[in-house]
Length: 131
Image 1 (tube, helix red, strand yellow):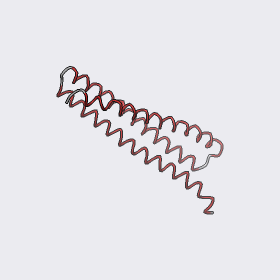
Image 2: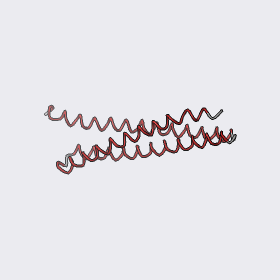
Image 3: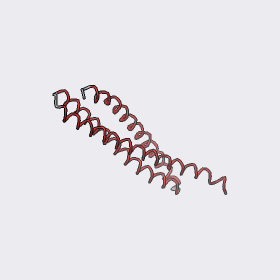
Image 4: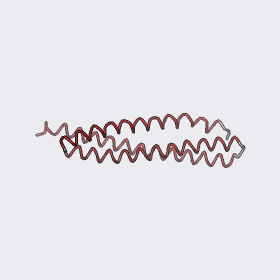
């Protein structure tokens, strides 16, 4: 394995971290608006949304942590390959790929929670038409 292999992963991890940050910022905005709504009405659906947001924020924190670790390990792998420590560079690159995979799996869980939260909102909007 040469230096090119982990170098190819560098921009992908950077874009992934940017996407995670974007999701975090969207959740932060949503949390602030739900907080204001909750203070005004204290509805049950708002409380459910806030609980979901807390879980999603925790998952995004884990996604970001795993992404940063993957990025750091990828950089370390490139350094090891640069100083001709091929075996160590390969192992570190392998761990980098595993942490990236773990980050993606946590992201998948967060997307599932996001969909559940949207379904709470949809049920709430459908409730008046059922009554």
